[in-house]
Length: 169
Picture 1: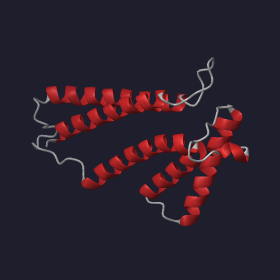
Picture 2: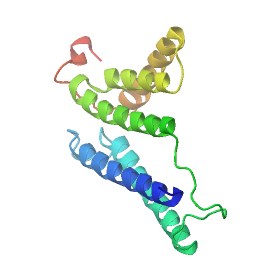
Picture 3: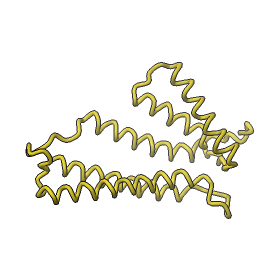
Picture 4: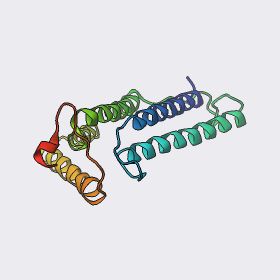
């Protein structure tokens, strides 16, 4: 597969994932009828940004493909190597962590889901020191709680599996 075809395919996948994330964001329960700021806001913004950036990248790749005669000949060397297996696996892991995060916050609420997703991403990007993982996971989750739940007053829905409201969180 030439580089331009691989780019178009990966950008189409980004757009599809963004559309699915948009669908999932709309399924988040909210009890705030008046305000637009609520538990859906950040997932909707992220999904919208993913779709927008995917469309921009797809458009740029398509224009470059048309300009270069559909050969993928960006530098005059014919076929270009596609993404390495490691990079593709890392991208797939990020997407999987994102979907797991969406499922986890319905099961456990945002706090536990955020801590698990943060530690998972840190592990994926090479942080293996247990102390760093614990500190960054706790500090990141505490920062999230401080800004979104305590300062902005966004409702932290109880999970169907774990309900932190019993602890006053």
